[in-house]
Amino acid sequence: MRAAVLCLLNLLIVTGSDGWHEMRIRKFKKNFLFGAATSAYQVEGGWDADGKGESIWDKYVHENRNVVADGRNGDVASDSYHNWQRDVQMLRELGVDFYRFSISWPRVLPNGLSNEVNEAGFKYYDNLIDELLKYEIQPMVTLYHFDLPQALQDLGGWANPLSITWFEDYARVIFKRYAEKVKFWITMNQPNTICIEGYAGGGMAPGLSLEEGGAYECVKNVLLAHAKAYRLYEKEFEKEHQGNVGISIAVNWFDALVNTTENVEATERAREFEFGIYLNPIWGKEGDFPAIVKSIVDKKSKEQGFKTSRLPKLSAAEVKLLKGSADFLGMNHYTTFLVEPGTTKYESPSIEDDRNTKYSQGPEWKPGKSSWLKSAPYGLYKACIYLNFNYDYPPIIITEHGWSTGPGLGDQSRVDNMRAYLGALLLAIEDGTDVKGYTAWSLMDNVEWTAGTSERFGLYEVDFESESKTRTARLSALVYKHIIESREVEDNWAPSSLKIEITKNEKKNNNYKGEL
Ligand code: GBH
Image (cartoon, rainbow, N blue to C red; front, side, top):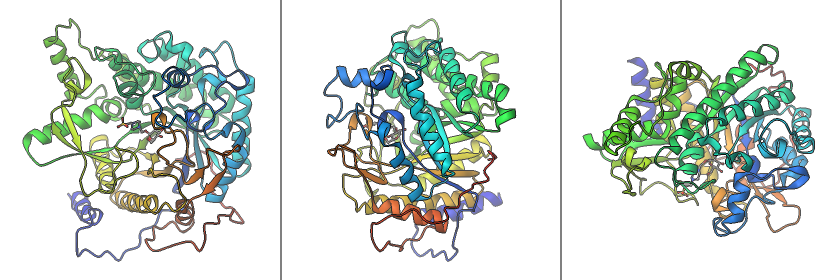
């Protein structure tokens, strides 16, 4: 009860109700971790360099020449394959504690399977990781960020239950090589994007529409692959290396458009289909897919004439494997949606038909450059409280939050957005949310999937026209650096120039031993 009253007070602050003046200064604790993120396909380039295999994104953009908005795909991207020293220099300028990046599976295992290892590809990650450690920046490694080896897609990709073993074998190769040096692991980035946007008509690679079951089969396999990798680390690496293994899930916030019974019910469906389906098997009391998701898809499948549900079952052993299979929840949070019943896609069977929700966003919320991105910081606060109450205060690392603009260094809108969301995060922490760290998406401009470089998420601007893909700090980089130093979100602070330098006596959590 007390907790609930405190929450209400902070909700008042976060929604900015007029006349409420809070004098208290909130600070991030000294051991709170700040970082920045990228992903392999989005920054590396070198798409076929030194024996790298083809990924599903390589094939997708090469075969569908118009699929990338401005035509700039990941072939060269920000060329981090050659610019890794400059990338680490930027991280030092910012003064972050960690760098979240992903390993390109086909760069190190060109055909996806563990029989053929590409040493030349590994060399890139060896260099990057050693350079980070040299400056006491912790590597946070994502094993899978959307770029499946095409050779495995040819065998059905994540819709094939064998993918669980392919991933476990891949994870073993990576853990063996880097467990000594890497203490933060993320198995999967956003199963929702992998399976729903990738396998159910969402326009992400491999660009499939397997509404009759393939997309749900993907959800099951991706979750089980994650759990197998977690258990592998737990069994063979944890004792010696003391690292943390988590999974990143898109937990945007979903609120009822107006408070009618129909809308509230639709909102519950939105939450369970959008993130409960991934959270509940790992953090739910009983585990398994959420009851609402099971009953809706089971019932609809029957009506649609299927003999078995389009949502595959998890066996008792699988439920057990998944339950508790994460040391932290990687929360990717960008925006909020307002929910009412209905669908824009009247096909049946389809996942949209199962979910039966229509989304909009507040007309007064500031728009980012991406069509789906509006600023609603109260949503981060509410999402945190929802996670606490429904999943019993899970340890959280915000593994992505960010804002898109056009090109240009004076990104005041990114600064405003970051300050507002970090302010909301401080309130969520005050109200009991166990947040260990925050990751800005993104360290630099990169290939925003099918949006190409038409939407920029970087703290650093990348000049994609230049040969060397020159990086330049934006205003937001300086503001983020100041927040990390001061541990405080100050609305009125401004740098005297856009010059950013490595702060002398870089002092990090440098005796970091892997404890969360
Ligand atoms: C994250 O996901 C990703 O992990 C990261 O790679 C990405 O760069 C970042 O966010 C910013 O988008 O245009 O309406 O069809 C976000 C997943 C996938 C959400 C593409 C928006 C397109 C929606 N994004 N999706 S729409």
